[in-house]
Length: 472
Image 1 (cartoon, rainbow, N blue to C red):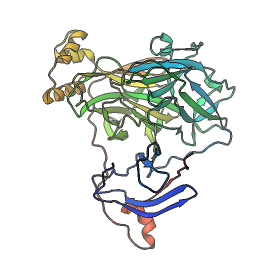
Image 2: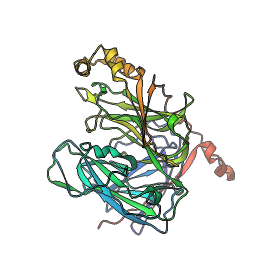
Image 3: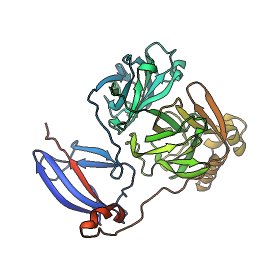
Image 4: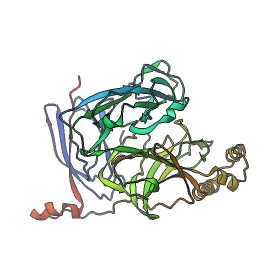
């Protein structure tokens, strides 16, 4: 059962039931001093709810849900009057009884003589217990045949690399701001697309036939800007490892945007690790100084990996850089956790949604393996693996290894669709502390002037309407 909070920071204002709808109105201080309360910040938060068919309190079973809201920032959205959709899905794929499987299908989208704008991405998930995430990539023109097979077994998979859409476990529909659209058709050409699905099947369930994918809602009423997606962080490649027996191990990936030719206006981000991830922070640097965070989640949950609207626009200028920091907990593991595709392996990535679109699709880095070998006294890859695998990972060893990974150079790769630009990062910059609201119990001032003082006295009135349909 839920634990009763010893200090009730909420005040119920009203509670009504009408025609199967329950409406609750309440208030809470933005800057609560209660350690059991999450602070209300400018980041999106998840609200969870449960309900019953009667007023008797009991286990809700499947009568529950979640809703992400940004209480302090709002990103305007609009539904066009001329709207259609098409689906890109797997084709009768039998999920194997294996812990991890990446399956790819290269397929055609509808042909559009004139450019259209995709404004909403809707997941179509047949088996939520095994479908972990989906990525949709745009292919280069020379990819001209359809096929479905295990990912990364065909060189043509590498020719479909520009991310067009993404979905992660726990996410729902995603809609871009009203002045932005993801372009398709027209000058974009009749290119093909690669749908990649990560199936996570640790229970080794057999016989699941899956047709999951994405429904893309589009309109001919073009918006002002074309949107693009940038993947940044630590490159997914063999070679780096996370030691066991630690509750707070950090890895870092860098994205240097010096090769970019124009500013990026960022409106949403998606943070991504696997099971050991506990925190993800994306530091924003300009002229070698951190000016803030592009995004951060100090309560990262593997089961909720949706793309989040920032609620406001953040600008990445030419020459800016990002440092993606991931914090892992491996206290329940006895062996090394390697970087890789499996759910039991790890990643450290951020997906950045921005406008106007450019050709840059990947901006990732990776620790210099030769420098790591030198630091650990290994001369070959196999020696490095044996050194790490046989090491006694006490607290001192973990701290020293983390320091080593952070201080050795990193190789940076930026892919602009035509060429891969390589650079070298000598050292990872330190990140500032995550912003937290101060404790402030200043009550609202009475009288007519209270409305104009709401922001200054840090109180907010939350109107949350839960619409509960009667059980069918």
